[in-house]
Image (cartoon, rainbow, N blue to C red; front, side):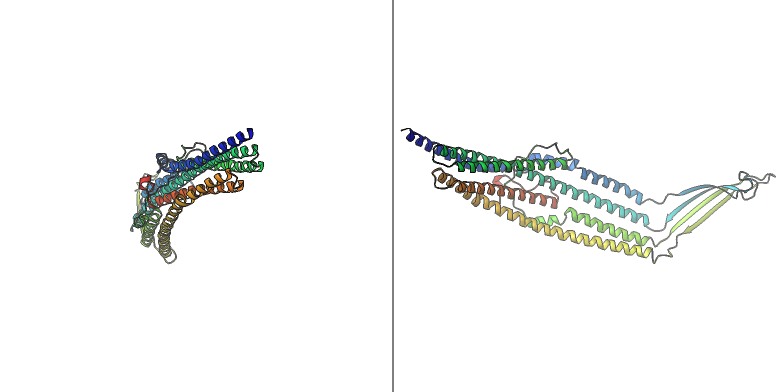
Length: 447
């Protein structure tokens, strides 16, 4: 009679445990979905603003821009005039006697170099083009920083969701341990099954520790790119996005034609034109004017001595033009050609990146859909079936562990594809220099 009641109690406990496990499997899927259905949230938007304002590398580049702006008026300014003072024709027998010799006098001279060409205008054009290139570099660096922050943010979200997924699986293993221990204590199971599940639980706990550490490091990376100390972590992400708007490939290609890296290269070509013009101006000489006034003392005998005035004019002669000015023109032309090739390479790189990002986005979309509609439901059903079979002894514990591992691996792989697709959208946003990326609410989902 007692054995019969134990058997009934065991079957009832197994039934309740199996039902609990099945509910855990369903609930964990629902938790994963609800936790993931979020657009680019307000916290991330605020962090992107903070990164734009406080990222040290951006601050450094903005200071370089300020320096480039300060160079423009310098480049366009003439050479400073020269003012000299001197004493001429002093007698060697008495250096301080200014009226001993007729030619002794005190002189003041002023000289100024006057350009007969457009050299300084061309220098100013070069400085302006370099300043514009630096400004475009600031824009390029800004998009790169924002892409990096978004990427670290999605890594952080992925790792946090991975920890949550592992936690759900650990809860499932804990329920299995209860079932297995009950079977063992009632003589219907093996101690080795219980030990095998304990080993699997320890493996999951170790995996959880590693994921938590990686999540903290991802959070630290976000903090550092915000200009914070590594331990000043921002609020963590709520989860990964699971819905994405469709991309207009043609509009994306058109927008990418004005990508920041292309604009930087265009400004360098413009600077090359200005440098060519500057090097040609060097063939035209500069006029050098100078004037001096000499003060003479009257002689010891009272004879009056008139002061002297000296005026001179001169200019540079490009007699070494074949090896100097001519080579300078060739140098500037070569630099411009180099800038043009760099521009062409930037255009090709951007075009290739657009196509690559579109391919990646489509691939992740198809794989996410496959996991949502096929792999995960099938793996969940397989685990549920294995749980039922294990509860009545039709399969061993290894089949159960194998089904559990398959399910958690597929869940983690799905999360990885969601993260990678969000990173693709972040790269697209950086490429076309947009402030937001195409993440939407569930009703707007398009695959």
